[in-house]
Length: 154
Image 1: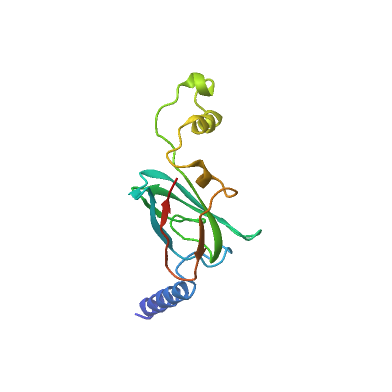
Image 2: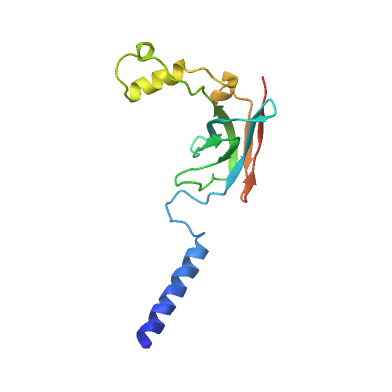
């Protein structure tokens, strides 16, 4: 009975400590907050792509996510952990998912050929959204749950 009570107390203390630390691993990066939203192009949900939040701080951490049927959720380190508070430039890349002949990328498939195939693939949105230096999209992640939508235009 005493041993069972000790296990119960240990379990309660562990749960309380996890709640105090935000239920996540103490990975040294700092608190991240949920970020999700919708990406549309010309008013329609973007079928698929990638979204990146590039920190405007020189020592800041970026976050990224996959866009599927217009929806995305950001990850900094672990799946869906969100982003750190701050200002970000936002990039979006969406490429046509068609097969590229190996003659255009040179030889048998490899990671290098994948990068080349990605360069050859047709962009489904204006290229200006694909680089932090040319994107006009910005976002502020606040210390709360964030819903951030982006409507891309030509």
